[in-house]
Length: 143
Image (cartoon, rainbow, N blue to C red; front, side, top):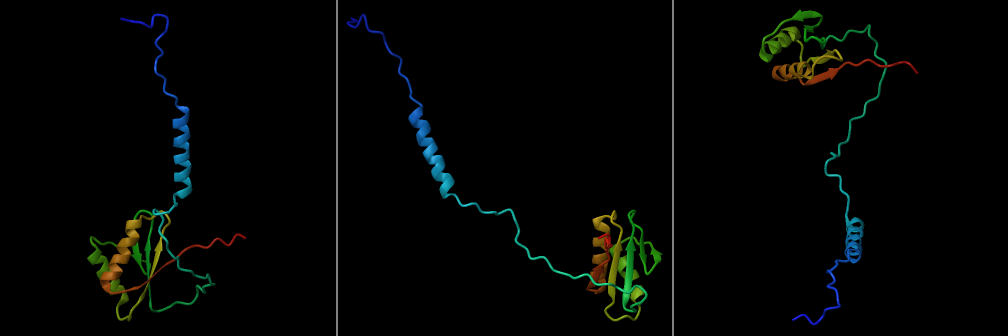
């Protein structure tokens, strides 16, 4: 029996406004209480160097100049070398050093030379027992 003939059935309705208000309050609370840490960054202290004028006419007898060009050709003290392994490059470095005690390795790498070619020189110098290594750069004097 249906005694409520004239009354229509109202569909239940969900009011979203209070739920949105609660979510906004939670969001504001999370934003205010969150600490922002930069875990992806590494904190490093870079070395500092000052540029000084180098007299190019003075030859230092304890230097070994190694040059690598963009296509991967190497020279030691302006003498072209070919090598098949890091050990053979190490032997070429040792023969270029001859009787020098703890020579200073100067790497002259072309800007388009591969990173691997420079690492190969550094590894060969390490295997030869030479730990004094530096790189040459060009300075831009346009001021």
